[in-house]
Image (cartoon, rainbow, N blue to C red):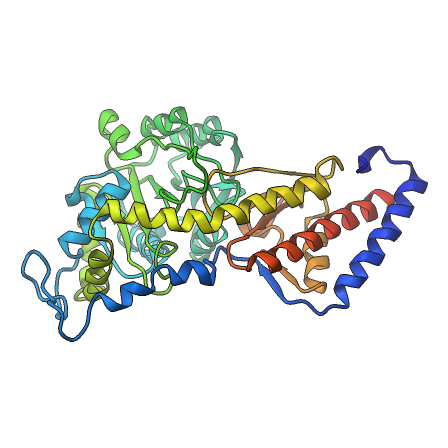
Length: 427
């Protein structure tokens, strides 16, 4: 394998023609393979099928508190499921609010609530004029979609580092600009880089002195127990650190069972201080008379407790670890010494973040699409879809079966090399 950046023009021309021939062969196969979203594979979904049998028409439908889960009520969720989420997020049960099946829905509602009604005793965000939200990037495109939906919120890109968001930049914005109202965070196995925030980063978040009383940290701990190696990352508990600094109102924490059981029929939860929960519950109490308690009960009886959830995650790990190993193996085999691509080897989460030659990401995604490989749009991992280097591509290896994943990765590597050679040759 040769370093493309040091190849002589004649050699690079020959390499380009060879790659083009291989690419055309794949293109002629009419493939249809998907690596675009972090969707659990069919084999993962089947792990939870027994859950469908834990409640039947002959079952007992009462929660431990004596409430009939078939009926209205219990706006914040049954106590049994709250206890599981409390352990998952590392908070007290009284800080947990359990909702429907989607944590993204809860994030959207939280932003909408603060925008329309305010938080921290301050005026609603929409009445304060143009406000700002910090967006560590590359990051989760759906986070950016939520804040982008509201016309009064300007998204500000904050670079990611090996230890999390660049905290010098975060502190500068948060502590000096009162129009900065929040920040998006995926603190463990970040989407897409797979970075887990360091202890220092978490402590600096907890020690923030915001210029705005209504600044909040949107702590989306989506992958808190999604480990894929025997040496998983550990994340310091932000909620506990915020208690130490007197900043208990800063974080709003989120998680769900979407990638643990069924993405379309899981259970989502948030955790927040008493003051934050009071504001959010006012909104939810008008939106619904209670979320799906039968589904909460189904999850509780399937898992029994938090230890049962962790045992279930070991089954996911057994299915996912080979997929991530294959990604690293293929990228190393085809791109390792070319000088045109870098990537991380995460210990968990759902993605592998690949940085191709600057100016080539859109071209790689286009070439893959034409060859039948679906990828997340280039630029999607940045606010407004604007990757300043046109370099980052998010690979989602969880959904395709192993044989399909292998083919998709081979094609991805060819497209990455083809786009780089084309750029270097000035074609």
